[in-house]
Length: 164
Image (tube, rainbow, N blue to C red; front, side, top):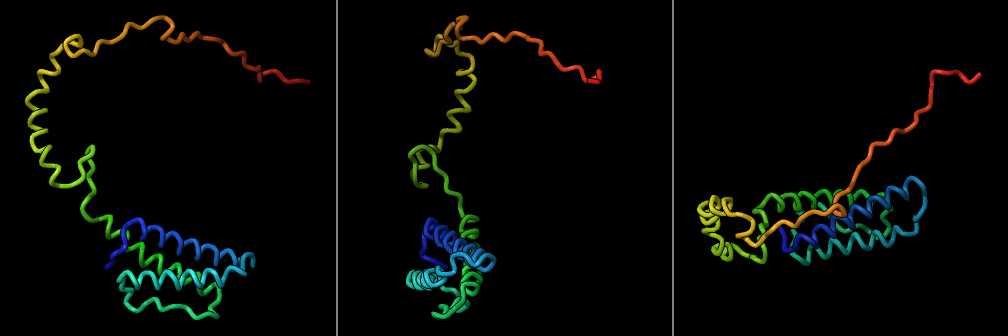
């Protein structure tokens, strides 16, 4: 469907949802009604941007006219966000992005081809080693390193007596 990267797509969806949210708030409260023109321009710019990036919206999202109400902009923005959200979800169902250290591609994974076998062969030996052999010696704990917890009784009020 697109040449948008995932970050651009998420930003556009978030912006469209914000336009829809603002339109709804304006419809309910009347506040920010002067922002309708800006929201309309932004919505139409998003459509132009998507078209320039080769995104086919199937003719379902024409640009809105200059006299469109904020309500109409909000509905259109919400619908377009839902349409693009579907694209975002489809992308996330694709191949997982696996990152291991600084290995960035499938060809780099060749370097790890025998890692499992090496671990399987050496694990029993590693477990038999004493800490002194590995250079990882535990430090002796001092009294300052430990926290002493003393029991304290907390006086509780007596609710059985009436205060008459």
